[in-house]
Length: 369
Image (cartoon, rainbow, N blue to C red; front, side):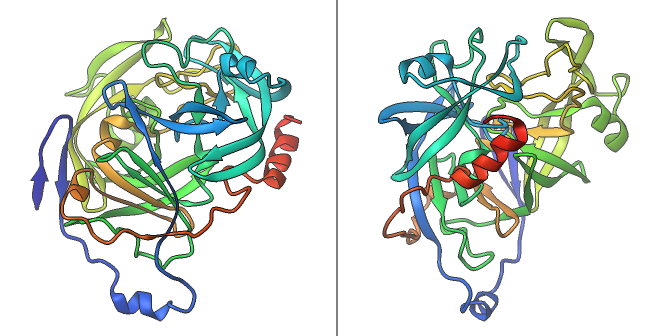
């Protein structure tokens, strides 16, 4: 088994048996080769700990933070004012790290992403008193799972590229870039989150892929009942307080190995957060820049895998297939393989957000329209 060293956690690679050509041939009548629908060059910010995605809204170029942990697509109040979009009241509430809340959304008549277009897409409004999106490297909103799940998605952190692929390909035939080893774990989307099953020090853990989080976190409840870790356990160190509340203490622990099948991260520091950091009156603990939906009685996600891990990986998410593939991020820097074919035409209304019909149903459910 080999090791790839560099800054941050170490990536370990092992052997994997890939699907045979015969398996793909057997399903040739029902599937085909990869076809790329769009390719987008992302912009790294915060020393590569976050990525901005260019998007055109109402004919103006905007930069949205790639955040697969965000519950819905969002725009800042500044952008809403600049585009003269009409705020509407909904029943979904979003809080930022400071407790600022917004329950309003807007409808963008035209949205373009990488040559794909859709109309009448909703965006939640980031709380107007929030500083989200401001600072030395500002952004205009949140690029969430809404824009990803209808396609296969490739995140190449070696070249900072986001690629969309049509999902009608042969299962298991997706890693087109040069590689020595491929890691693969199950993936599903539930409650607008990308969820995978990984192994942490040999134990299976359900986790959320969160490109909007700078670090990997775990709830104290998961640490205790799944891994036997408490604040008194050897190796557990005290971190800091959460949201300025001295009764909510965070901790940290260095795990030996986080595995995505045969690709693993070694010596990973994980922040252990209080189990229940939100009540009806107090905002949820957030990870850095996002605003998220909050229920009346929220419990922290068992584990969120953040950019301290993800930026070292080259990721292919085959949602229809139910598989999450990874190689080291530098694997594609070798002699390139033949790239996949590009779909001849990106049809209108093909932005990978929810369709107008589905958005209408969601709006009715959450009171957004």
